[in-house]
Length: 208
Image 1 (cartoon, rainbow, N blue to C red):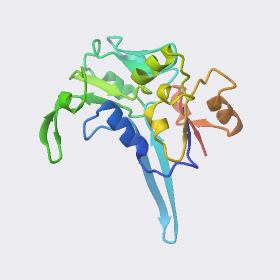
Image 2 (tube, helix red, strand yellow):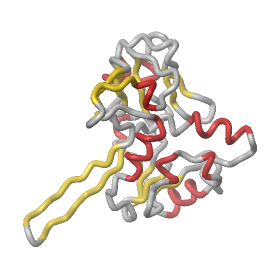
Image 3 (cartoon, one colour):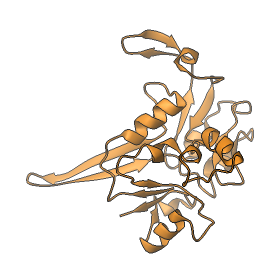
Image 4 (cartoon, rainbow, N blue to C red):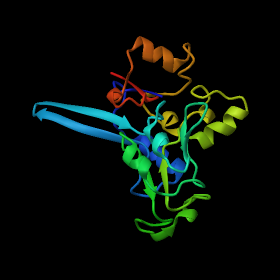
């Protein structure tokens, strides 16, 4: 994924689209937009930084998982197998980007609706006591790819945060293809990774 910070306006559309797509609890956001203001009036500047799981090539979360629940797929997407996760949360401590979340219960409070079962909110088969995170919408992409659609080109094979970005600041595609849109953007716009010093080789690149 490539995120163009010069286009991002911090609207939060990616956050809300992700929340709806994955039926997340009120206090959980797999996709976040961090905003920092600097300076004093009238010389004030604002820094906007969208963050989420970086699907690192050398993911620390994969290395520390004792049950093998966290794994890296052949296409580079890092996922968590709910059936194998034991809820130890080692991966949460190992992730240098703070991009993992623990689900302790299926019942939560929704404003104006009281305590509502998670299943009734449209969620299917969610388990408690497991770790959750951004999946690059793998459950959405996989069936689309099987139908011959291309990630980053066809909307049905592209993460919801990319589709819902009103300023078209997000791009998705194959980093291994030197001719893909994301590869060309990284090469021509000098795309950079967030905290490369962590040594995890993130799969999300930013453009200034």
